[in-house]
Length: 477
Image 1 (cartoon, rainbow, N blue to C red):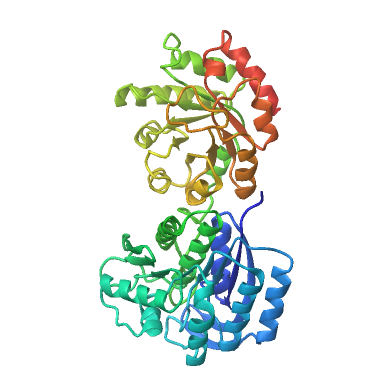
Image 2: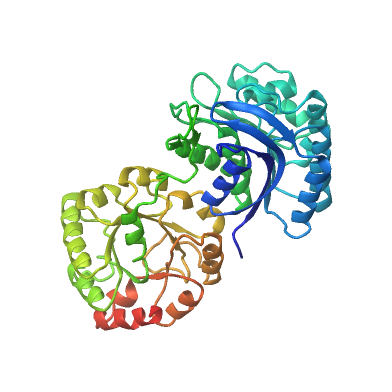
């Protein structure tokens, strides 16, 4: 399996803030591969749109035919279209190639009010395109223009959404960033209306926000999330991006879709490079006769590269003191100390990072608290589960590969092939294989593409922990 493929059909923004430039950045930031067909060349900058040259429909058709005859995208985002002829070209391509997960962002005008689709084009969009898409994502003004319904409240947005369903769209997501109070989006399907609420990010640098949202939605659909999940994660992605705007001109800047920290940290990269080989976890329940210090000393002597402190019982002050001691031991051996679950303990002890499970603090919140230098690892069991977490995660812990005897909530075994799938979808993330790994199967997870293997009982329960670690570590040499 390779990374999901997302096709964006939209105009070009030479300032880089919106259009295909913003779309391709967002697709890449979320771990997918982007394709594009250009519908228009615009002359614009951070201050506004100055002119638009619409791609001749035969050229747009040629672009789409070239792409789709060769590659099948997992999702499609449609942005700016320059007229009825272009609408018809795109509609025919969707029908001919039976494209799925099509997200329509009906761009009718620029933020400054420059018309981008005339009345004939709008009529064609409603007649020929709405029914061929999975979801339409108009903002309040676009929803009003398409349905004729004045939108001043959440209830009005729902009414407009239902009107779009009546016009043919299988689903409608009316984005409410322009509401005066909180930015609430309303998702309407045949099953009813659902409101997605979020915290307003106070910034004037919002150029291209609609492009970013619809592209993130399409990308999450490409990863296999259902529409409601994909919409929620796309909304969170935009909020994170708005907190880190890129401001390069005299006008409004644009949100950076590169996750919590738009500038890669050299310290983070240095730590990430050590996520290799044996990753040992302490477990006071498995061998209460062996102290964490004893386990860690033996594992480090045997070549472990990462130590995770996992202790569900120790009082917080004692846990912080223990984490500080284990950090010193790990650093002396050139290894990392990761704390399981407890972001507060990781912060207080200055550990190298934290590992989070599905019931712990969100990865985005942990990243905001820990900052750009620290490691944030997360447990996942599928590509779809990893997709919304990857932008803020440092590494992906995949499992349980062979089941687990140390965690009751580990879930059914997913098998070593799952490592291949997730590694292919997220090539920039180190993969840590988790669950039931020992001397008889560690070579299989390494061959499947794991950079590291999390090991507990095969080391902690071994008669000679140092030698057991050394034997496991040899697999990765």
